Length: 389
Image 1 (cartoon, helix red, strand yellow):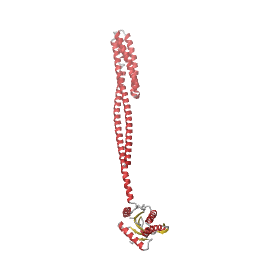
Image 2 (spheres, rainbow, N blue to C red):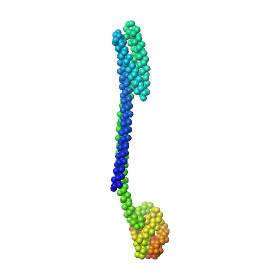
Image 3 (cartoon, rainbow, N blue to C red):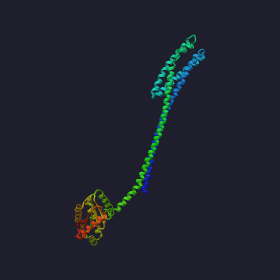
Image 4 (tube, rainbow, N blue to C red):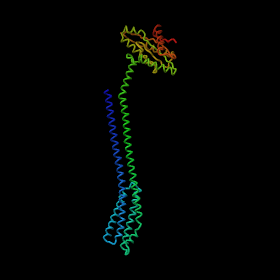
């Protein structure tokens, strides 16, 4: 379990690092987004403020002009209001120039600001001409001066109102965009965290399953293999045979293909044990198992049934074809050379052959093959006999 715990700790650390990295990445992105949105909002707010300031300065400029004409009879007041007019004229122009620079990303607003500047310059010229008329007129100078410039401020006022409206729309749109972007960012963060959490949960679940259950599964498979493997020969044992023949009988029933059982038994095996010892007997059993295993098809099956007895299942082979295979295996077993106590010993084997009948059980087919094997033994050994139908 220590190795499993180590894996889980490693997985936890990796998950923590991934989460931390993602958190840092999201925070950086969030800050950049918020900064850009705030900067954008500040700029549009500045544009709107500049437009309002231009409006106030321009209105004050017009009012100062009117005061200049109305108070013209007083030289001090004339100079005072005329100075105020000049000051606000300059401020208006400065503010609109500033607005024009701020609005370079907004063509419609910039175009209107530039147009206002041109109209404002024309207006200034007319105001100065009006002042000249005022100074030269002998009768009702304020009326004469005012009449010269009357109505010429309508176009600049109209333009300025349009600029204010545009700047307000830009500000409102950017404000709305800011809110939408912030909502989008929050949704992205929430989605990213949710996705990260799900991925980490899946990863952790998979890791735990693989880290804990996989060794258990491997242990179960290993135990199953050991339970199904003969310890001496390394081939399948009787338990594996019982499982395999059940599967083969079911397959035969569904697909109507022939299945034949061979039951091999080493001849005079007791003689080998009694005269040369159990180690010699074990060597013979291992040798016979290797011969059987190496000379059957991939789809066929061989197992040590017990003692010196072996079973071979021939998939999709009828009894005549099985007889040829059985005799070939028997001959290969006989060709093996054994030397025990410097004495050459010939080993033979006999076999009983039975083809599965319709609705026949594994006990019944084995019984018929075993009976055929008994006949082969009684008939002189080292032969293969087919079971009686």
